Each structure stands twice: as structure tokens, then as C-alpha cells.
Length: 90
Image (tube, rainbow, N blue to C red; front, side):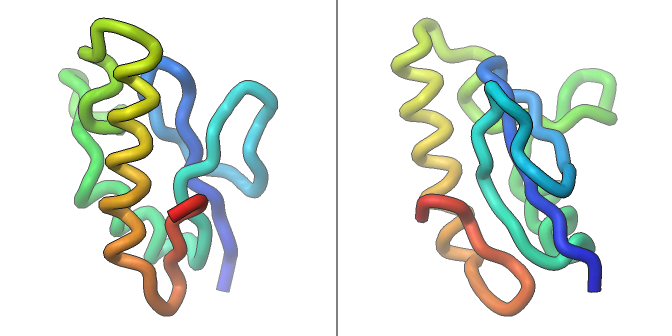
């Protein structure tokens, strides 16, 4: 089974890859299908219905509030930890 990491950028955009790029924050890791399923089910979908966003980050009025929204999302993802999926930092 292929492993993958879900990570996000400061603006809340979520992407997937084998590692966390410089400047991004890891949010979850595990089996590719499971990670994608959990993130796609819990993330906010952008207006283009293609990009995934961390709920609360794009509309946060400050960087501090954006980080708080990211922390809440990672905690929420942590409630879904199990075989094939693990929230990072939760």
C-alpha cells in the first residue's frame, strides 16, 4: 500500500505528496486511499470544487487565527486516527 502525506500552505490549501515541502505544514499521513478519503470528507471544498482547504483558514482575519483554525482541524482529524490514517501532531 502506498503511503502519502497531506499538508497545507499558509492560505489553507491542502495538497498531497510523499513528503512535506519547505514552508508547508503536515496535517495527516498514512495509506494513500484512506488519507485522501478522510481529507476529502472533512476539508472545505474551494469554489472550483477541485481544491481542498483547511476549514477556517482562508477566511481567518489574522495569521494567528488561521493557525488556531488549523490546530482545531488537526485535532478533529485526530479523532479519526486508526489503521491507515494518522493526524500529525494530534
